[in-house]
Image 1 (cartoon, rainbow, N blue to C red):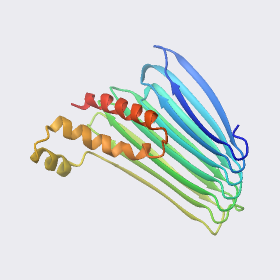
Image 2 (cartoon, rainbow, N blue to C red):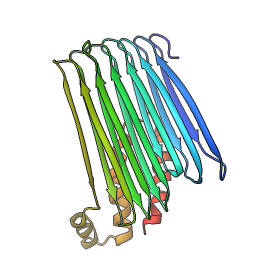
Image 3 (cartoon, rainbow, N blue to C red):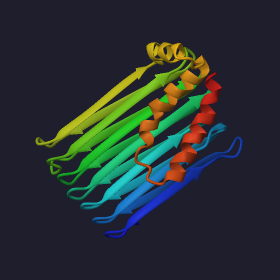
Length: 245
């Protein structure tokens, strides 16, 4: 619980023993005028099942910022159920997934906008390679009382090879008539023109591929205020993406 006016920063790190099955739940309450920043790092779990559930309630003028980085596993799922309950509540939900070698990462969110003048910014990006499977499911529900809501949800996926798969399902359910809400979804491959351009300037193909993917994912880390944490995650991504070469 973040009490009224308090500023809280939390870093969660999850890993699994081989062939383990884990299910965990965490609940957060953001009080009036409080600010809570949450960073979640989920290690790769190639032979394990890891299920994480997050319940979040944001009260009047409170702010909740969440960044999730998932590396997948036999089955790795993170689900966020968020209630934007108060007037002027602000929510940012960012996420990145990197799945390869037959791993699966599932990121599921449901955001319920209850109070007026609330804002939501949601960005999810992911890559699948080597037979990896990425899943994004996002739903924004806007109650009739949540007038003046400004909510945007975007998912962008990159499939590196024909063995991999990404499934995405963004949804809006709106009962208020004075809102600005939008969702978008795009799934594609590496930009071959950009890859060619970088190679023409002397960059080896493997390095060019890795840089393109790193820059694609980096936008999702923009809200991490703790520089050491952000740097650790970027280094981890760079190391994982060496599998692409």
